[in-house]
Length: 311
Image (cartoon, rainbow, N blue to C red; front, side, top):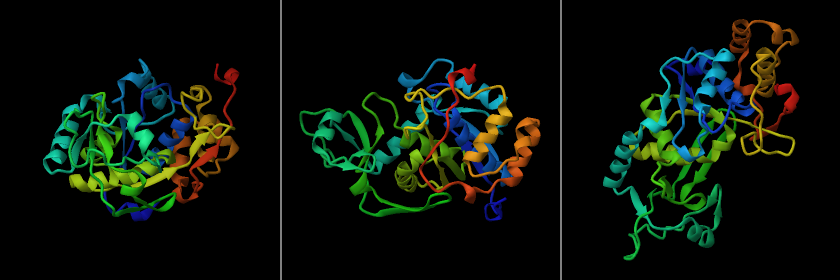
């Protein structure tokens, strides 16, 4: 148990996107966030990040929840669905606009990719619309103004992180050209409104964190503690995902699967642990959880079970 975290209420969360069934990489993220919350006597919430409807797979949200239950996860409050919270995101966007912190942008993705230099997470927006739209252009997106300051934070797994948004990202999108709110705005809003104090998630989101911290500051929100765990990859170094054909986790032999997850997270479960009941398995894992034992790297290879093993 991390005694330094127990002086204030701990509220953690797992926030999957319903683009397919739960695979091993998602189970790793769920497990790490769950163990950290429970080891610190905290609450653990589940939020469904279903803003991007074109990418959503029908029935995937319920399938994810059913899979979590089958592995013994227990969440503490009602599930929040981002698709039902557009009014909240719009109110926050209007707040930023009224403070001249957000502005309309007419640039197409092609224009930006052609003229912008490459940054830490794609093209760095060149600021073409920062001082107003060209007379013959209509707004496509809304962007947040960033400044030259260095955004720094201490990640509980990856260590000290810093980023100068103006140089490495540029003014970033809050509302997309298709009318959908961007991930950065939605996640900041929901973490704040749900009172999230600690975020444990995959390191593929590490480079997004300075944007979220900066946006939190502009909105007057508290900044949670962050911990970014290694992303599970296949033998080719590709993140396990729908695009890389990651197989759903096995619902049978759940103890053995969880033991593989514990090993991935730097724990050393005894062999017999795979064959005991889920309640006892989770009790062992919560008691032995030490976040400092997680490998301090962004990616980590895991052996993917064969398709025959999934049947």
